[in-house]
Image (cartoon, rainbow, N blue to C red; front, side):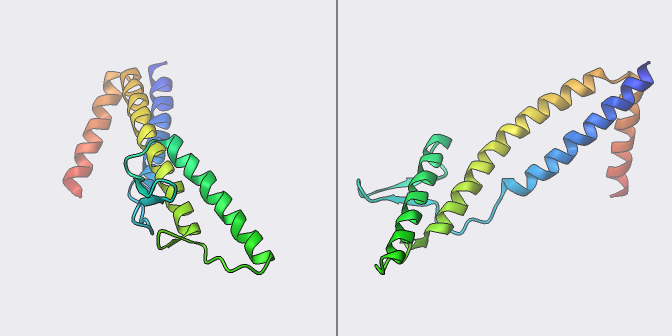
Length: 142
């Protein structure tokens, strides 16, 4: 029975590692803007690194509204350059989406670490020893 459980735990640990690899791609994205979003009404700027997700979602709505205004302007032959704080609206939109994904990835890393620790606790002692030896072997080879 322990061997069957160990195999299942090993499969689940592999899934955890795959998810961690996906998250690594999100952790350090290349942003296009300077992440300092100008707020016209108050003449201040929002640091996208410092605001919470609710504010980021609010900014997505604001940008979407501005993009809709640009469509209307184009339809009515009104000039609208679609720039906001010297960056295109699409650039702001993409960076804000990346910032939200980055925040969610940080939470996922913590959750995956908890799952990983629980799974390792469910393994038999022999399997844990075997995995540790494999890990050390890879370190020595690499």
